[in-house]
Length: 349
Ligand code: AMP
Ligand code: MG
Image 1 (cartoon, rainbow, N blue to C red):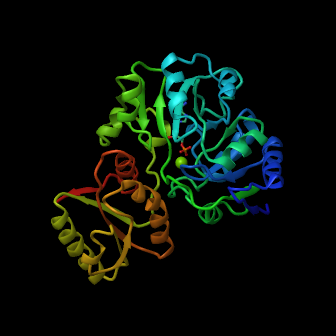
Image 2 (cartoon, rainbow, N blue to C red):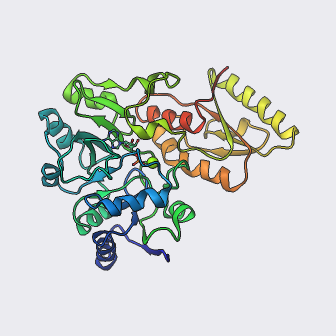
């Protein structure tokens, strides 16, 4: 299959490009497009055969359900059975935006989209191109991250091309995304609502609005033998090919230990990568040192995380050592993805 790649200017979107993307989606094809979180791989969520193509292109396990993306509030009624009042408040405040909510589904949503579950995950993205493409494609677009399953999620159209060129109909290139980690997932079918995946909309932000929120235990104790409630969270995800180790503790001690480990691996002939920050990169002496952002603002770290993991892959890195980050605000989502990429390999120094 030849993949069409088209750039779109977000200040002045080309109607032809949007129409082409919409037509492909309506006829059951696959279109990757930017959202504010990561690039999504879109298909008509109400067409089981189209949804099935997503699993094939990504190599995604079929029990891992897809998030249905909508562009307008009115679209919710057709696909969800009960919308609790708290969900309406959350939607008013955080939609469009980086938040997914889970509801009981109606018969309109095929089980092939929800991985066999009787619930459906729904998000309304804020990204202008995403909105237009969803509308042009019929209003209900299943769109998981547009990467090969298991690889870091794509934050640029080039990342999508690396993984999916020749496997999908079209890539709409809207430049680098704004946030860089996937949406917060909030399960509205339980009381109190439960966070299944941390993202840019934090527990504190949600609690300020609707009161008590619980958190899936497996996010707090990742080693627990219980399966996560979001099926996708059980996979070793977002992972680079290299062995990634995250080190936490007093920052000066962390730097010292990273240098020690990096020197040891380099001496054995391995290609070593280090993830540091503006504040610390000057203190590393061995290996390929990359700056992921500033410790003053974890949004910058979120934005660079997946791109850096992909760069280490393309450079053939064997071992990566990373500093850890504070867990306030979006830092919680960053640490969740970083530790998953590391297969929970966290060292306290
Ligand atoms: P992705 O779109 O690739 O970022 O992944 C979507 C995430 O949402 C995965 O972790 C899924 O397991 C989760 N998810 C989607 N639908 C549901 C649902 N109905 N119930 C629980 N988790 C869901
Ligand atoms: Mg994904």
